[in-house]
Every structure is written in structure tokens, then in C-alpha cells.
Image 1: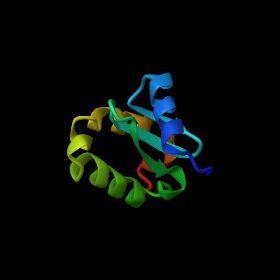
Image 2: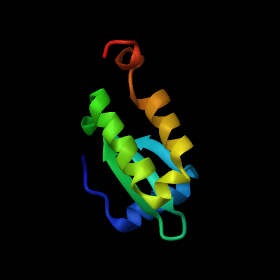
Image 3: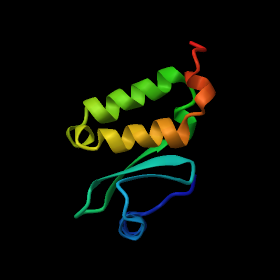
Image 4: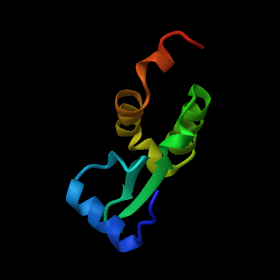
Length: 91
């Protein structure tokens, strides 16, 4: 994954208008609109159900800003990232 500097991240936030999106093999979460802060989770670290649940807990439960964005984050994870066969009773 290429390094992206702070200014580029701020421009990415302004241009796409979303709070949660997938970009360059990572899940991006904009959690401070004014400053343009983006929290990035590499998709390679979301390959198993255990990894996905760990990230859900880390972001949606452990981070204050994650709680208010939980629905958007979960929608991105379950509809855009995780293949449905992972959740088809294979556990």
C-alpha cells in the first residue's frame, strides 16, 4: 500500500463526501470532518471472522467516535468487504 501524506488524506475526505469507504486495499473511516482524520484498516487484516470481529470491537466499541459511526462501518464490512461465504454457517 502506498504511503499517503496528511494533505492527500484531507483531499480524499473532501472529494468523496462519505464517512466510510473502501480504497486501495483498506477500509477508510473519516472520524473528524474538520481535520480530515482518516482511520485506515488494511483489508489483509480482515481475512477471517475472528479478525473482522476484532476490528468491529476495536473501532465500534473501543473508540468514542466509532460508536456514532457503527452502522456505516458495519454496512461497509458486511456488504462491501466480507465475502458472503464467510458468514454462511461455516464456523
